[in-house]
Image (cartoon, rainbow, N blue to C red; front, side, top):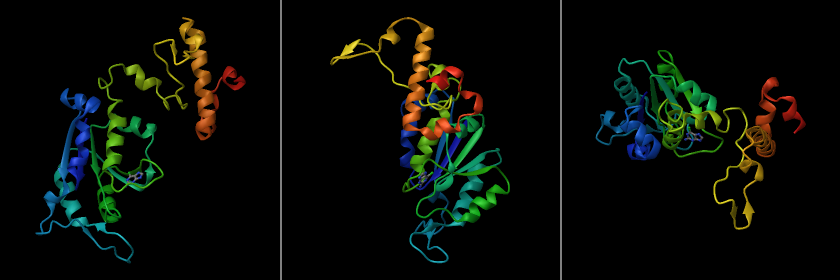
Length: 240
Ligand code: 6GU
């Protein structure tokens, strides 16, 4: 998968080269290219923003510089354009699953009060464009949201995770939060690892894990339980 990020703070994306993502890049599984929006300014001040029409606080990113940058970065390789914004549609695990099969994602990071809306409207007339938010809080710009989204997508790509089963068994993959996990020693500060996990009874372990996942989801995310499809819970789940 090829990933392009256009931003006025390229340094913000440096963590993409660390750890799991860094290894995926080094292994050639993803090709990440970060571009500085200011490279496409033509004025001496390299201005990327201007005052909003209609008044109000903050600044809006100018359409000309975005248009030139995106025309160059997009070239003629088909891509999906992603615009991170707190005013976007929520990014979820389902979004990550949908994007993982795309050959190319291009992220346009806005700062200030956002990018002139005509940029989104213009590119939406030629290609798939999505304005997405990573949660109900406001960040200073889209860069951190891009780190979040790229990591969520990249770990679903074949060969990126050491054990592909981890991606399948995660929180959200079955619509429930994952329950607690334990490792050695059996007793730590007087706290014991639940006996069932040491029993070797795989059926009992699976049932216990399912119950803890249901319990945790009911307590922390009742909205997720309510949203499960009709057939997601079996009789035994309901009894729990
Ligand atoms: Cl994608 N961008 C910004 N600036 N703030 C956010 C966000 C994105 N998602 C949640 N808050």
